[in-house]
Length: 232
Image 1 (cartoon, rainbow, N blue to C red):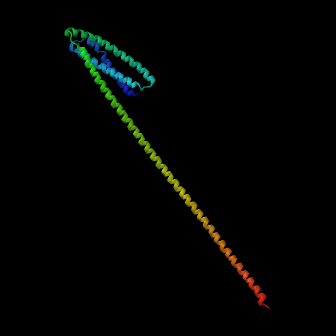
Image 2 (tube, one colour):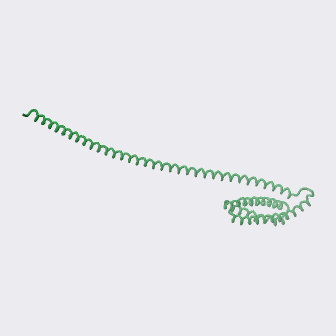
Image 3 (cartoon, one colour):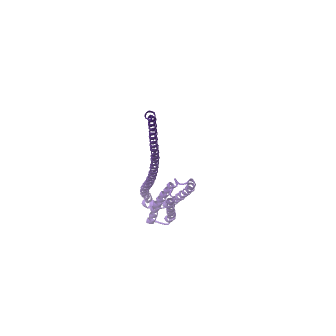
């Protein structure tokens, strides 16, 4: 419920009621065209007041229960006061109708035709108010759609930003993993080179020792042969 809209309707009703409550007394002291004009004015203002009260009732439907109960009681009081004014105006109009019938004989009363005209005007006002309500509802629906679209756009923007941050984190993680792999690979290669160099040195040492042993054995064998066969 829009409290601002309800207060506007309340002020409109008070203004119409203040104008209406003066008309019955003025109608009793008026004659001819002046009284006719007062009757038409009363019918018009009464129709407007009824429409305002209906608008207030519609506004109260979505109000909190505590507020709605208090204002519903006030609306009932407003309708009772408006009904009393209608009875007072009817009393004044009956006097006018009686005098009119005395002058016009069997012709329909002016008040009856004025009531028909007033009813037609009230019907037109009701249609106008209904069209205005439809337009207001459509405007509110458009506003809600625009608000939902804006919220959806904001959510999409947030998601894109979050995905961008996650991508940056993945890139940084990949870079760190790649650097670690490269560092580990380099360290493994360095250790492998050291092991290979050590193995190469040991192999060369073994070969030298083997060559020395072979040479020593050949020397010993040559000495034995010499001593046994050539030395007498």
